[in-house]
Length: 393
Image (cartoon, rainbow, N blue to C red; front, side, top):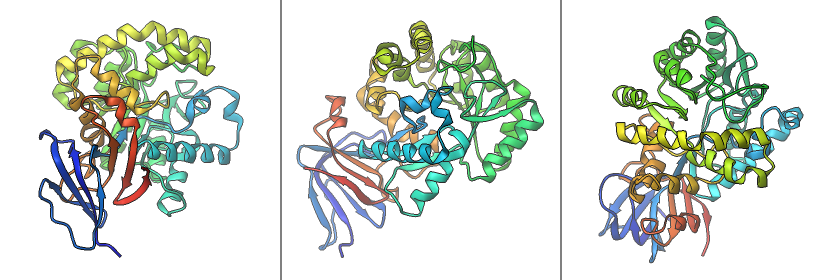
């Protein structure tokens, strides 16, 4: 049995700030990266994979995917009446599809009845190959709030505390709160600008998370909801559609991260009718496109750390490409999908960068994504924790 795998003669993008390694190699042993560089020595019995004309980079990280697809993410539809077993199979399907696309880590910010935690347990026991799953269990929302039907409803700080503790007891890695309404509405008249959980309620969740050395992220679209979430002490914001320049500066000063899900709004607005999404969702998405673009400019100008998130609409390459429409370089966009997204999902993560001693989550694509990011869809090999889970060509 071989003692390692050598990915040889490739362009290597480590995800760090160093320049790409031309005609480089990556040695993997025991689930870890052992060496990266030009002159990499490998054991004599190592499996050598010639990657001439290909690029080796860290596995991609999706920081916001409920793994339920577009139809089942449409909270408030008849899909919510399906049994949990159906949802579990659907979630497993989308998880495996993500892995095939080179996404080796998925942060799941809330699922109905904490199905993500149950499916992850099955994955961990080896029943199916899947990406690393970083799970929130059920999102925490106010009664009738955004995500109703796919989260746990609470009112007041005491109920928020109880719900937060319940998610952690079930194995959640982080907690998710709903600070505002959203684009995917359930309540009649719900709007992304509406604040939902208040500062005291979210602060109670933050206190529970901190005691357990976990973090809280907030679905926060409107200005007031964003402000409440920041005052409550969350670590990350999801979407941030109406984020102001002042709020972005506050985020940067505090080290609060952003998962903007830019391509989600673009795809809902442009492809929602084709996908059969509710007309009211499409109208809301169309109405926030420009303000969302300005909010992300505010985040860039302030130096907020940001990462990739798809929300199930389109693929992660859509999001990476969307970043470049703001002047973000292809290399910086790739770092947002690897190094930075990894640190958002799991602070202190040992994945997201190719370096000696790091986890061997690796993507190999045909071509050079630095000159054409669509080559990220030309997947040749996917490695998760040192195991090859997809190989073609």
